Image 1: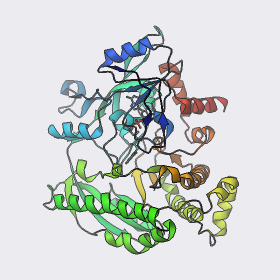
Image 2 (image 1 turned 135 degrees about the vertical axis):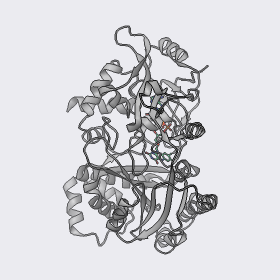
Image 3 (image 1 turned 60 degrees about the horizontal axis):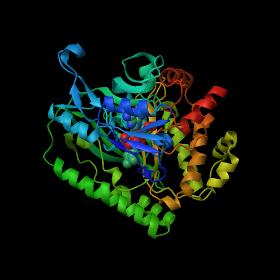
Length: 482
Ligand SMILES: Cc1cc2nc3c(=O)[nH]c(=O)nc-3n(C[C@H](O)[C@H](O)[C@H](O)COP(=O)(O)OP(=O)(O)OC[C@H]3O[C@@H](n4cnc5c(N)ncnc54)[C@H](O)[C@@H]3O)c2cc1C
């Protein structure tokens, strides 16, 4: 099916808008190949659910949506060489929620999940989407089929990549390796999660609990500067009877209630004072503590974060830098909110060492942070450029979400422009490829020791750069110069 459109394409965060020259929704690989051959001089970009805030999904010529590629085929036991099929071939455009439904019917699920399931599998994998306690989704990709131009014939073709550097690149390729048509992904038997919430004063206390609850995620409450931990671990117990009640409570209190209160406080009242009061006096008390609930992972690990439009920057640091990084975030948010009078000298020396004086001054008083700062542990992987790639330490992702309207995001951008760039210099903090990325090309590339290897793989899979968008063209040129 071919759609030529002048319609504007808009992402979830409404911060990325573009009008491509053409938009296609092929139904199968043969049709996709035909499209590529017919437009052989063009630049292509695949899009998923457009849930990225970064420039990852931007393309100005031909946009391809694989939303009709949604088949799920268990890999035969003969092919998987084990007594049980533990991987499936999945159409690249399937939304994760639909994949989970289909897997559930055969008693299987994904080993790891992000906070929402609206993304397509290819989109999520391509940006290193992650949850808490396990690896990012890219790590579980065992093979991919990609449509691109074969270097010998110069005609469009589909190649299956099953290992080596090419797989490590495509596992988190941010849309640059060609159009992914199918993904062979590891699955496992369905499992249960036990969850409970508890409050803590210090980071050390929360991290200590990780031994008991390896899948936990936790929230730094701005302006109170204490922690709420959502403790989670696998459980052999069957679903507890109040699980449905807990889901109703979670939906009404957290998915809906918390968001309405924080968004309204930010919009209707003096953002800073009202929000700070809510965090200091109300929020932690509003969450029920110590309610132990067991339920299926595909329900317990996710929430309805997509209900309200927002924008997010997420910064990944290694475990040994987590404490210092959180301290820096806290002080920088105070500065951004205009509360910087009592900032200690060692923080100001840190800031001075980055040389980002202009950015620091621009952030002063520009933005009142108004959302819990979610912190998640992600295990290191062997992909080339996922945010959690490389090393042997766990990574922690620190998420900064703003619900300010599109027309009122300038302060957020100023605050993140300082924070993300300073954190990259001080802590090698890597921004999520799918979220708002304030770093310049040179700053971003410097965070990945394998970027040159990634570039080499791209030169084989896509020698003429037809699957590269303007963002990655900049990144690749920068890396070339260095
Ligand atoms: C409300 C919300 C909650 C989120 N929660 C999390 C979370 O918990 N954890 C986390 O890590 N991230 C999270 N994200 C970020 C999100 O997972 C990523 O941005 C993801 O890439 C979005 O997937 P998508 O299908 O919308 O892809 P898009 O945004 O459409 O595209 C993302 C990238 O994938 C590429 N791509 C898409 N399809 C293909 C294909 N077939 N072939 C080649 N490349 C392709 C695109 O070119 C682009 O580079 C969240 C985002 C939102 C809006």
